[in-house]
Amino acid sequence: MAISEELRKRVAQLEAEQQRQEKDVSDLTKIRQETSTSEKAPKNKEGFFVKLVFGDNAPVSEWSDETHGWRTAGLGTRYPNQQIAAELKEKWPNYPLQIGSAKKG
Image 1 (cartoon, rainbow, N blue to C red):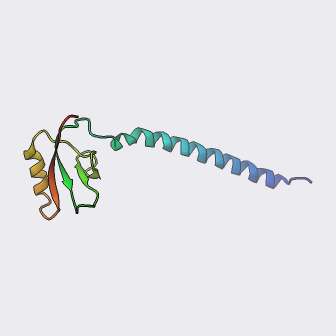
Image 2 (image 1 turned 90 degrees about the vertical axis):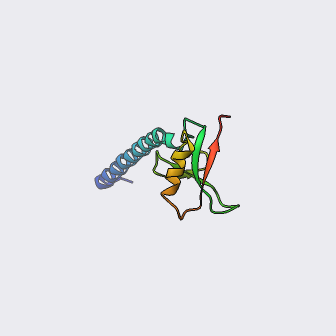
Image 3 (image 1 turned 120 degrees about the vertical axis):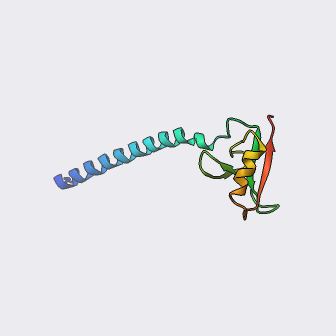
């Protein structure tokens, strides 16, 4: 059974597209690994932080200056003194915010 020239060209195009997509996936994986540092805990593990608490059983989030958003507990920005955290808390007076304290451990 002979394969037509058109079919051979199409198979070659599909193989080239598959290789391109595999390279894209590889590149994106590298980029994700490089940017995943934002998933790591703050370098300074002690200090004060602002946490968002909706209730006893609700997950707690912490404010992060790095991402300008709320992060999982333990990943928020640590401030050297309580006043800085309190000033940030004042920006959102209607949010259920609390100031927490973390010690080196």
